[in-house]
Length: 94
Image (cartoon, rainbow, N blue to C red; front, side):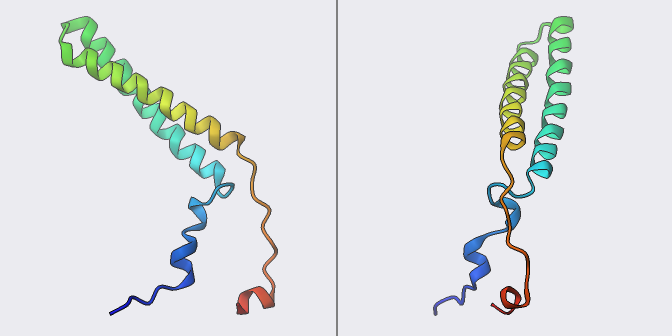
């Protein structure tokens, strides 16, 4: 039995499209980056205090995550917004 897929399923969420909601996307990645920074600093301090190898590994992984999220934040800040057509009665009927 074939599934009835409507057009919206093919287009995806507007949030996921390039150039849309870039400020929101940058904010979410910025929040993750801030949390990863706190975790990296905590694990680095734990390693300096207790010299446990897993704390050093965690600090390194969280530091890499900070770099990864910084890359995403900068991408979303630099992304130009997409010009959208104004909604009219004709486009609403389609």
